[in-house]
View 1 (cartoon, rainbow, N blue to C red):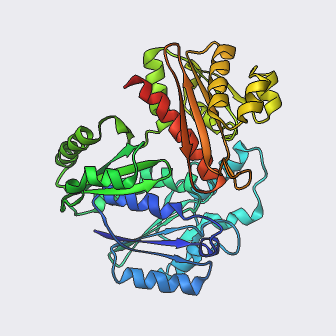
View 2 (cartoon, rainbow, N blue to C red):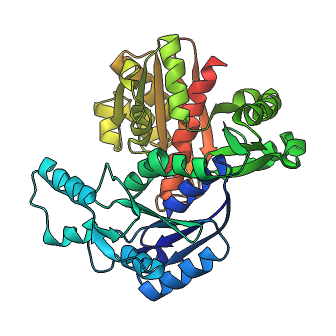
Length: 411
């Protein structure tokens, strides 16, 4: 079975919205062994959408559209599908009931314009939207399938996973599946990771390995195509074992796991607590740590000590140290880590100070200079780093290194 995705929305063409739906659908189709050969984006224009649909119908078994199912006049997907298939629009009682219940639950009066969404091409299957108002549609026409999904990812993703994907799997004649595993690495540049796994990157299908660079980390994606999930998983497992043997503790997790999540697991296992004093990262490190469910078990305190007054009066750092070395220095980073550890009564103290830019650099201390300190009962350390990129990128990279430095205390 072959598929094609058509994303609908002028806002996508103008770059006002990032098209994450195509990436999501592409991954899910690949996992199901359904070949995706083409994707396209069209604006809110019936003629151009009809052209895109007609072209897709000549080369794909399943066409998936995203967007254009709302109640406004620029939502033209349903009318275009009706014209294309020659099926009249009729009111769907199930859709109307769902919409009435939706607005009743929200304690809102249903707008008259919303009634547009209750009309669907005659004979199509409607898929309930459990998050929003626009129903999904499955239209079978001339041995082809046209599937229409709402544009908002929070509506599209659960609808596709729960209803559309099982439908496609039942319909598909493909006798294969594609599984993948993403291995996440930090502390090494892409070029070094590339050299360490070079032979694996040259593997040919059905099992392959790809390398991808992201801010503060490198990812290795293993993909395997096989007749069943067990065989594909076994092939991935063999390659993953080789990767782990080569990269060892530079690997912090896989698939959806984050570095902050991996560190959280360690701190829970070791029954340790952590406190943070940040300057240039502005609370980003504390934010990342507390994004993890259950972080209250190990995270005690975070302080954004942005000014020297706070560093001196709240943290208790000597004014002499600040004057002699400057706020961005090894000495101050160490004092920030030591003082926050004492203030919070934590097992681990982290201090970060630096220049995130784009201004603030000097001849001796350039933009991107960051000092990160870790203090425990038995260890004190300060690391000097120089990052490149935008303000946001420098802040993120600093927190990535800080998380990894704490993680490495246990290896």
